[in-house]
Image (cartoon, rainbow, N blue to C red; front, side):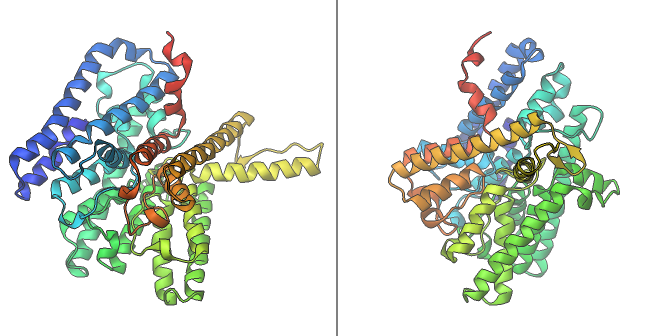
Length: 477
């Protein structure tokens, strides 16, 4: 499936009159590599695939992600857009992990085929190449491996089936994903035609491709700020929010159950947190006279949505905002969107479970004989579910700590190191200080870039599947 994706930038390059020889070299080599490796794996490992264990399934996804990111780095090197292999791997991993971090400068003059490839990799990575495999190639495979692979890739720790068969659920997920993509491109094209003429169809396609998966790769060095258009920002906000909301709720809404959004406790909590952050940052910017009240609301709303959906688009340099606003942006990077969405970071359900666990702890301390549960809506969570969530949160912050230490040891200041780690772990993109929205990650050392590439990989696949690769039991029969 990834090999087919390389046809997109080849066609784009032909359309924009790029050199055919360079196109075939840059995209033909990875196309052939992906096709040959994929077919060989299918032929050689078909029987083993039927009896795959849960740990093996998660490790398979983690390895596939590394391999795809490595192969997808070839176009950047072949076209000379990036000189260093580590930089190319960083850019490629940022694409497939739907992280907006970049080392490329001069996007305004970069080849259109590369710009489309960056956007397309984020679009595919947002929902997941493994989900695509389950949906489209399911007829080739049987057994119990399909749900395991889907669970390893799909954001969130649970899967809500929308159809009797899991591959049908995967197809429905992609149908909704494509529907919102088409709607977003149409809306942005209309804005470009009637309101912001400088926004062409190519820019509209690339930005929606990276908005719906919470990616953030743009086509201009100034990101969305290039157009300085409230209409463009508003449309992108809607697209980013669509990607950050549980797709099960979208499925219910598209079947007439619009109240499903308001009935969902995670959705209500997500909107409450989003509203609080927007109001706080708006007030901070307005009171400190950074912008007028209207502009404070505009920039606050766009950047809060962009950050909490882990997209990373920017229309202003929030690294120059007051420290209180920067701190709230950093909090949004950690929180993320909803379970079952394309967003990265912790996600709202886990945040709710942590907060409710704290409340239960206090209740038990006050009422020793009482029996209390952690509940999400009307659902009582088991101790195992709560422990799983708390363990993940601890692993998440431990990874942030280790990542910050590694990046800081390369000579970066603490604000740059910590915000870069938080941003890459949450697959957001821009951080603070030296890696703010007005700059790139090119300033970092090769060691820091490689470390952050691994952190993006860990954050996208939610840590466990990646760490299983290093567990001794994975090497045993």
